[in-house]
Length: 407
Image (cartoon, rainbow, N blue to C red; front, side, top):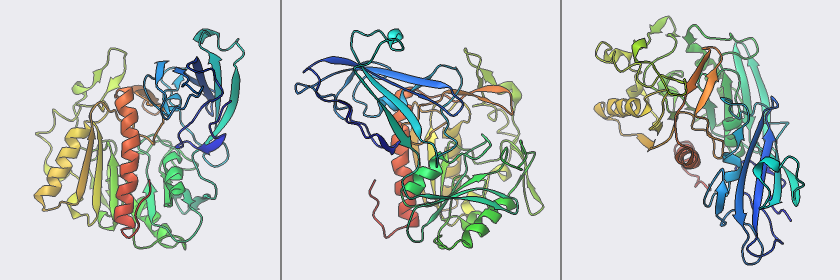
């Protein structure tokens, strides 16, 4: 008998089975199809307790795709049949992940699960949004995105930018909205009528999103937050969390009311290719450090708010550890101490919400390259869970100082 909740947030841990034979070993098989029809699957062997239960909160996996006590191991260990693809949910409001969970006797070979009848099976719905959260499509002037609101009164606002992937990604925004924040997931390329690829970034776009939020009746006007150092005027930022990002402009020139912020020069000779043929950009700015003056650094010391730097020390795309060190030293030189640095050994570039299957490599379509993001599975999974708690704690501390967080 399966006892795990049939419908819940993806953050909810799972309890699996009871009414088994005491000390019986079983195979737990999990699978799902993403929105493109790509199949992901994982498996783990577990031993029932003396009362015939497998409780993943306490039971240790004996083998398979995860080993040890991992309550959410069957979710984060999902691997794909098509290589160099990641699990990415686009529609967070209408379609949950449909997770197939099956339990077999331990003598079933993994390759035979498709033709063997399981002892018991069920379909789990795993949502990225809690009941009651509403989504407002944002299409005002040139602004494009989605505003996700928790039911109830007025909320502090988070502006969520999801790196250079393009499109509108709402998984982090919807999960934060489920925890009581108002979150604007912002698109800036490859979405609706926005350009497929930016040739320059106009920072006035980020001022427009701030003005939009200031006009909204359910937004706490006192606070704002940004997920990047590349946003609108830093003086408007109460708290900013930067996940594996640089303290300078590295991809396209940025313009702000006629002033052009130039790119940090890079050396293409420092680009490297891994043994698997994956592109690594980690050191392309190292050789040009001497010729780049401090004017290339973003003026984060002008910010009135607080910073949270989150670093994966095995990020093969950006030398995040070095750049976070530069940023904190820049703040320190100007007498600023309102920052926190979280640095995780063995962790790669894509630090996502908890229990997301780690992605160490992925194709960037607009560059036609297969990028190496880096990271080891177990440290990366642990960092995603810890950093998510720290992000919420950071936001609540600086945006709702009178509220005690219950994570």
